[in-house]
Image (cartoon, rainbow, N blue to C red; front, side, top):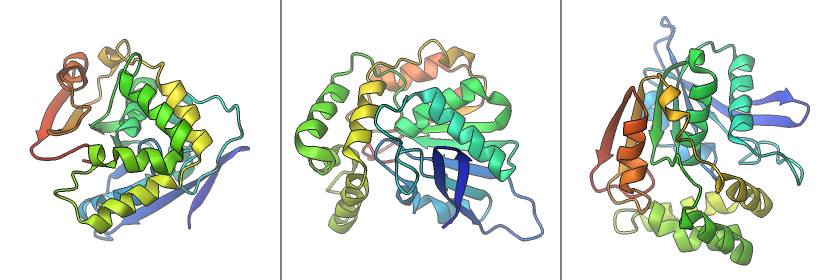
Length: 247
């Protein structure tokens, strides 16, 4: 199990998959998960990508098999972006393609703003850029507070995966993966995220960006989709027909 000691407080878990031809030097894709998720959620992407690219999946600070910080840690998009930068430096990666899903995409946007020289391209999957004033996050916080992470995920899972299109075993596996996350970490990150709005920094991001959205996502508001595309000067919006929140 590969880990990287990135600072005095973080042992980051990551996966490194490369099934490209051994005589080639492939470009690298980095996959960044969302809130309460981990490297395992990308399992179906790896076989599709790793034949042509080196694929790095990470567990962000506080999630999966990476270090859980102590109570009172200063959660911020910039700190998450800094952890990602430290991982790239640790692995000797000068420039990568970055893909983030949900909040992982939000972190990826922050990274593109702060470290554009480290990116070939960016893709964000059903990712919010504006949390402030969105009732969903207040609802999520209350659910996690009252019913724990498992209760929150159980009650909101159908927003992420359409049960009509998903194997019931896959549906339960997805719930189990998210439910492993520390309740404190989820509460602290939700509280922080509820204050965030990236509207001002999106126009500064010049990295070629693909915005992937699910047609049936409950969070798929015009402001989240066309609003982001309008603010990002070098972006393309693609809607996946029939998909729910879990792209």
